[in-house]
Image (tube, rainbow, N blue to C red; front, side):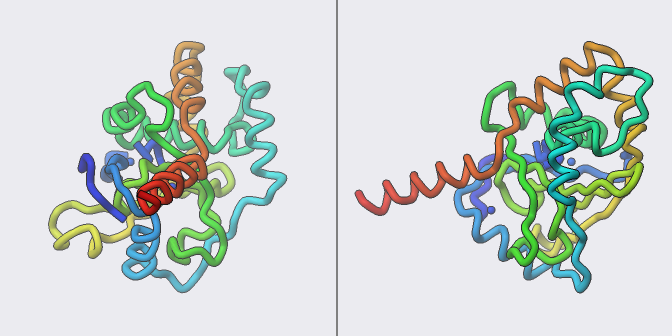
Length: 220
């Protein structure tokens, strides 16, 4: 994780945005979200868009998680987990130390969101959820449920490609049930995951604060 890196700027908190196949390095602090979006679009553009979750699916993921996650014998899929919960489970598998350091027990360490269709993030990320610390492209963990699995994507800067701008996007598929079995079975595990998930805020809150700070600077 590269601390206090001015980026230009979701998750897989992550984020904080992140199994043994590599670490997405989810934590880098930044100042300019528009720049990271253009960098991702320029260097990691894809010809085929990812389909997004429907509104009903997203609503169900949020509303069902509290009640359905109480049964240890439940067969889990994306309908039983919120974006924050699923992102947290991914981060605990991919890079738990980096994720916990990014969260740091404080509100605002990690943010979540969904990449809009047609956005500047890059076509291959359209429709995917993300966790982010709003750093350079390596601070984003993108993920999207795919049946019983979750597809994750992240920019992997291993130091051999000449910088983040040239780093490849890695794609993996992980069983959601595996994530639950490893990190969301006992009550202590659920308390830990839900504690992290509850502190992950919508990225719009970060953007609102960023725009407010920028406006204050311009007026001085």
